[in-house]
Amino acid sequence: MLSEFVKSADWKSEKHVPVIECAATAKAGEAVAITVTVGKEIAHPNTTGHHIAWIALHFVAAGAKVSTEITRCEFSAHGAAAEGPDKGPAYTDSSLAIRAKFAVSGTLYATAYCNIHGLWASEKVVTVA
Image (cartoon, rainbow, N blue to C red; front, side, top):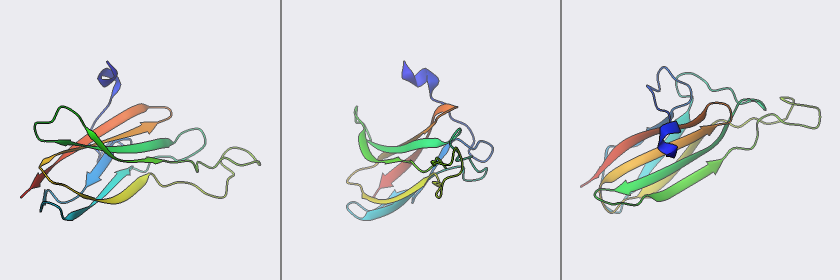
């Protein structure tokens, strides 16, 4: 099972954990601002050799057996350039910001992939009133 290889930890002491920030409660049908950041407290390197390749955000409605992918962000600016590794003109900051509307309560699941340290995950419950 892939779940055996998904890591999680306290994001204040680990630079790989995707941190989900949004309101814990929402009104049905109203947009909620959501940010997901890797390296919130401890910056993650974003170099050609060591970087976050992508972040995905899923929502699982309470009682559901299937997740809904809300967004996926691929990061492609890791300093690669014709001049060589880490000499590029742009570097990606591993975070995303979206707005989403929820019809029911459920759980947000964020996953992030580090090209060296693998797959990391976190979750946050959102209650719809």
